[in-house]
Amino acid sequence: MDTSPALAKYQMSIGGQWTDAVSAQCFETDNPFLGKPWALIPRGNAEDANRAVQAAHNAFTGGEWPKMNASRRGALLRKLGDLITEKSKFLAEIEVRDNGKLYAEMSAQTAYMAQWYYYFGGLADKIEGAVIPIDKPDTFNFTRHEPLGVIAMIVPWNSPLLLLAWKLAPALAAGNTVVVKPS
Image 1 (cartoon, rainbow, N blue to C red):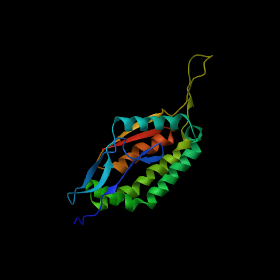
Image 2: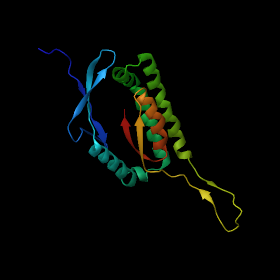
Image 3: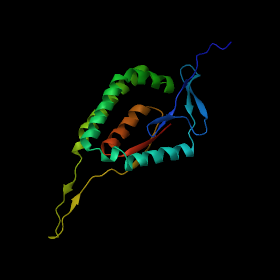
Image 4: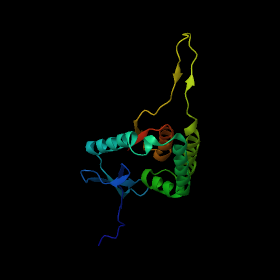
C-alpha cells in the first residue's frame, strides 16, 4: 500500500483561466531537500505558448485592459501587492519546496516583492511624455510613452517570484500584457 502523500497538481493560467497543457502531459518537480517529487506541473508546448500569446494579444487589444486608465492600473497593482503581502508566507513555502532555498531567504524575498507592485502601482499614472525643444519654428516635437504590447518574460529558477516582480510590475504599470515562461 502506497502511503506517500498525493502530489499537488498545478495548472497554467492562460487568458484568465486555469488550464492543463494541450497535450495533457505533466512533469514532476522535485523538492531538493527531500529528493522526492512534490508536485505535477503542466508540460506546455508550442501550442500552449501560442494560446498564451494569443490570449495576451487579445487582452492588449480588446476588453477592459486597453481601456483602463493608468490610475486604475496602478490601483490594481497596489491590490496585487496587498495580496502578495497577505500570502507571502505561503509563497515562501512553495518556493522553498520547489527550489530548495532557505526559508529565511525566501520569506524575506516574498515579503519584499510586494514593494515592487506598490512602487510601480504608484508610478503608473506618472508615466508621461515631454515637449522637446527643436530648432525648426513650425514643428511641434514631443514624446509619448505607450505600451509596447505583449511582453515575453523568462524567469530564472533561483528566485523566480522576486525576479518576476522586477519585470512584471513595470510592464503592467506601462499598460503591457505579459506571457511568463518559468524555468
